[in-house]
Image 1 (cartoon, rainbow, N blue to C red):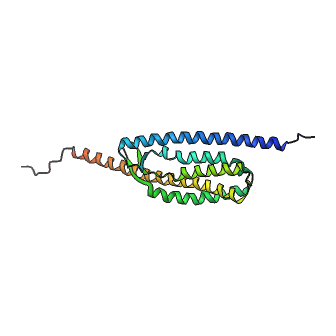
Image 2: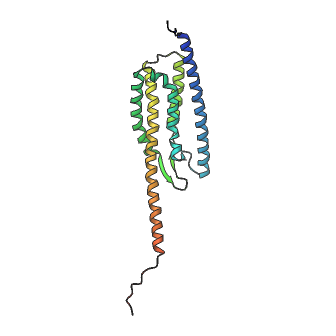
Image 3: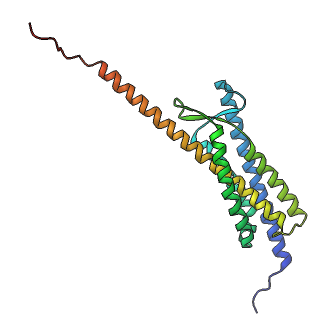
Length: 209
C-alpha cells in the first residue's frame, strides 16, 4: 500500500508556503521603498518637480520585475491548479500591455545625456494597484474564498493587468529613450565633424598673378 496523504498536513504545508510567500512580498516592498526614496532624493538635488523623477532604463525595468515576483509568489498555486486562472491572467496581461504602452507616451519627458537617463512623470498606479490586490488576496485567502471562484479569477486578471501595464509602459519608455539617445549621438557626431572641418586650411582658389 502506498503512502497515505494527510489532507490536514497538506493544508498546513500550503499555509506555510503562503506565509513564506507573504514574507517575501514584504521584503520586496521594503527594497522597492528604499529605491523610491533614493530616486526622490536625487530628484530634489536636480531641482525636478515633485511629479518627476530621473531614471535609467535599468531602474525603469525594476518596476515590472518586482511586480512579476510578487505575482509569482501570490498566484503560483492558483496558476498551477487549473486553466481558469491561466486564461484570466492571459486576458489581463494583453489588456495591460495596451494600457501601459499608452501611459508610456504620457509619462516620458526628456532624455538626459549627461546621466544617460530619462526624466519621467511618475505615477504610482502600478504600485498602489499591486498593494491593494495583495491585501485583498490575503484577506480572501484568510476568509477561505473559493480558489477558482469568480472573485479570485478577477484578482488574477487584475494582477496580470498590472504586470502588462508595467511591461508595456517600460517598453515604450525604453523605445523613446533609445530614439533620443541615437538622435543625440548623431547630433554630437555631426557637430564634431563640423568642428573638424572648420579647422582644416581652406584651399587657395585665387588665380595666379
